[in-house]
Image 1 (tube, helix red, strand yellow):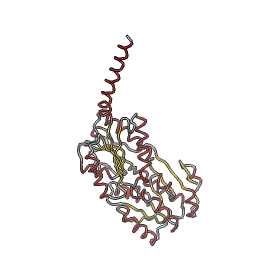
Image 2 (image 1 turned 135 degrees about the vertical axis):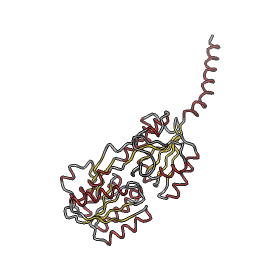
Image 3 (image 1 turned 90 degrees about the vertical axis):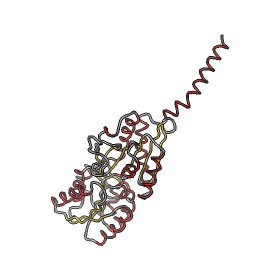
Image 4 (image 1 turned 120 degrees about the vertical axis):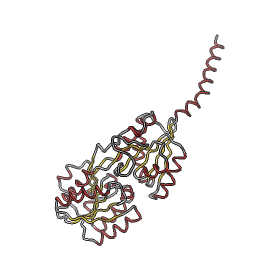
Length: 325
């Protein structure tokens, strides 16, 4: 009797062992990640996505393989990496910022989930926010109502402010809408705006040099990946020349700049995991509406304010979600 039981146990164990590789192979999802940035600049967002996936039961090495590619601030490299990822035939690709355009150029079938600071309709990623219609969907960080509020906050922190520079990328989808909002807000509070174009990091140095020679007292950086990658460089320049710089994402203030006001990117990338989950379970990107930010945060860097000689009023500090000291 015992011999028979042992034989059946052995048989069952063997059958299970034989079945495991096939089960593992079928259930291990391949997810792509493409960032335009360097690893050190984009790791926070990737970690947020990873946490979101873990919360939904996806564990690297167990039931998911995460194929990561980093563009190192090179658009040519991003184009090459997009092709590499598509060749791996993942079930879904998560594209940070403008890399969604590169992936879209090489596949119309693999689902793509984006976290994008521009207008996805204007960029041609989706037909509409409510009905994307193709193989792309995700979250757009383009919150136009916040563009003017950044300028108002800057004026509140610097009552003597008369002229501001705005660094913008004219090739960025949503740039024109952000300019319109900026002009409306600036005119309402008596500020003069001067634009400086920077189509990526290669032109950013020229823009900063031109601002330094201008009569502008502060600079607003439209939030794009290239600006965030250069945030520490911008902070050093701002302190050296006593020209406060503000933008839309928390990383900007964390990197040593005066203030940021905008969507919480890490929370948004954690939410992208829900899109990945639904797609892996059979949902089509064409039918998953694009989301807009749900949480906005104001981050003030007091250490930088002191270095710049800017006294932050209590009215701003009381509204800040975080104060860096």
